[in-house]
Length: 82
Image 1 (tube, rainbow, N blue to C red):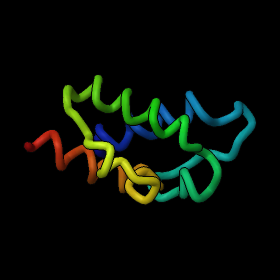
Image 2: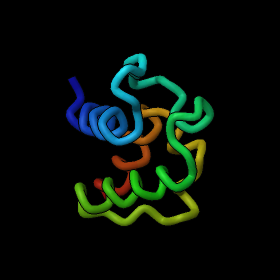
Image 3: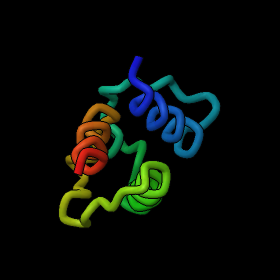
């Protein structure tokens, strides 16, 4: 298991899904699938920055970069290592 991906998946599930929604996976389209909107993406970015003590530049926080848990994990790891 991947702790970072699990944390993101849990956050998205708890914050943005209705109780009776189908479960999501690491590959579920979040933005293009309508689960996360632009406002939610900003709150998710802020959550990740606070959780991992990183700064994600706005230019890197694109809808494409936030469109799945896997893509978010790649983005976050880029700044954890920096």
